[in-house]
Length: 331
Image (cartoon, rainbow, N blue to C red):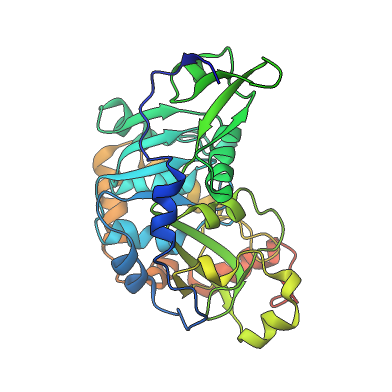
């Protein structure tokens, strides 16, 4: 197979499938109770220097409660898969947790505007970037989930994104056609928020799964946060509803409203007022420093943050806005 061109971007993670397999062979696969607090899960499974990935899509179904805990525990020098990341990227930048990032969609919060704090952090040179597209990062996770070291695709060919990536242009041995070889991506830790999970980690995602099925299989450690914990028997009665199986999950955290201020499909709408408050605070670095101190460092756990944002009264308002009856998801 001929190598024709190569991007100049850095390759942050080892794509070797055999090396990853050696790690996965050490995982404890037997069904067991993995319930713990967010504090315990982040303390045990997320370490300085790890490469992190966050599930969901944009501000939809993000693991906010877990991400706040990463910042609160002051994790540093993290790598990051910047795949469809908006408010989750904004949170990690608030704690200056990230030193290097595979960047596809970051900084922007869609129609809401750009995160000025995230942009300042990148422009300061404190974060090294490698460029990809969202599709490329999805397929890199797919390669890892398949247990291969790369996957061929036509994405990015002939673009500046390819030139600034770590992809390699190759010639197909069967047809002679050109493909981009995308290296497998095996994150150290994935943080994924779901609708329902059992204590062992069988998890149900209602609606859009984004790349989370592949992400869970590709990642060396997986922390699930869930709106609702149900008995194992409930998941076994409807095995077709299990989106992520327990065998890939290391920790389960019960986190009602754990996606706030993001949108949890069918359960509660995003808090657009609070997201605007974040963006406005970021206009001035000193104002934003006080903002982060108030909402993250100054709280002991996520539910103190929710209380500061209006508590259950506000959560119920957002639930009504989503036109959803409590408890209907995954029933």
